[in-house]
Length: 128
Image (cartoon, rainbow, N blue to C red):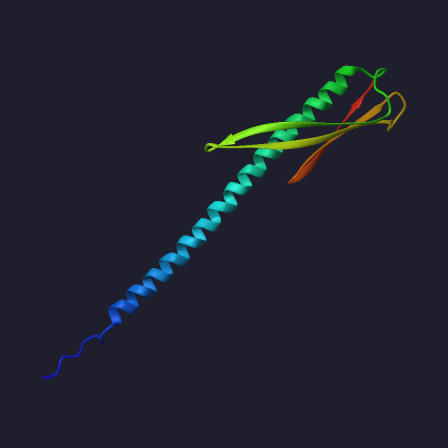
């Protein structure tokens, strides 16, 4: 009587296929992890840029209507970061532009903050 079983080497092929599937799943998970860390860093930079823009808008509002001169003023701020033991920095460039109107006795203040990965703009109106 003859035994019917697996051919020689079948277990090795199954193990290699299983390892390849595990490797593919692991690499996919690593890609998702890298993308989520990049998105988190981008969100942190956007939050910092928004806080900087709000600070500039508040400063312009507190300056007062008569002290606001029509035109643009550029500036920058460097934010030092440390995440998971890795230090870095983000440089934010800013432009504060004052316009006349939309009506009489109203000045429009537009603040634009930009950095390597993005840009935001905020606007407020100042009256006497």
